[in-house]
Image 1 (tube, rainbow, N blue to C red):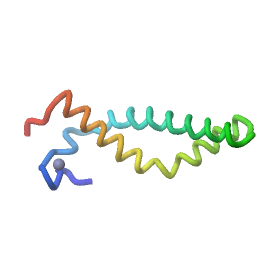
Image 2: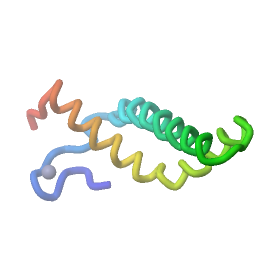
Image 3: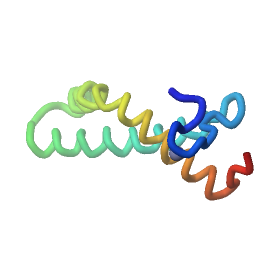
Image 4: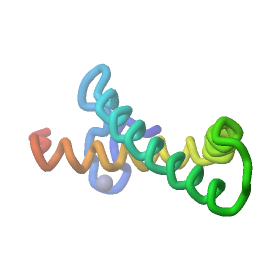
Length: 87
Ligand SMILES: [Zn+2]
């Protein structure tokens, strides 16, 4: 990941541990996605609930890198809305 945006120079990592907030966003989205995948599996298949939970998590795993990026972008937007960059 770049330290600054190559286009506009925005400093991405404003302070140590800056992206900790993105983890909360990532967690919330992950729970939602896993729930929706589990719901779809429950409607489509007649698996037991524990197997549905396991399969929902397994099917979610390939989405983790994209979700990490998305949550960081959302965190930057949220942070700069609340506390705009001055440098
Ligand atoms: Zn930029």
